[in-house]
Length: 91
Image (cartoon, rainbow, N blue to C red):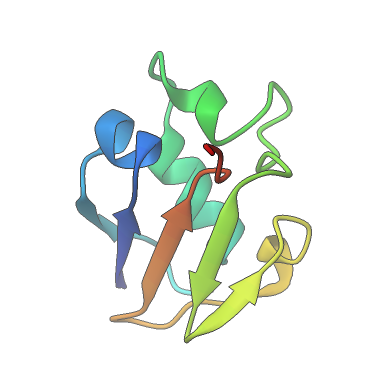
């Protein structure tokens, strides 16, 4: 199944604006984010050393915000879009 991940701000700089991933049926948002992070030098932006999604990552799926803790229980379907935002800062 193919899913698309769209990244914004710092995540876009590290992983590109949009990536299409080919994942096995039954994959979850957690699986998709781990696949995007990979093992590269920027992986630590999205996942910790235990490959858990970092608590500050904002995830949108079907116009609903998904917490990193929920990501493992949200199944994906072919054609789904996941949006990732880094923490917001500034003044």
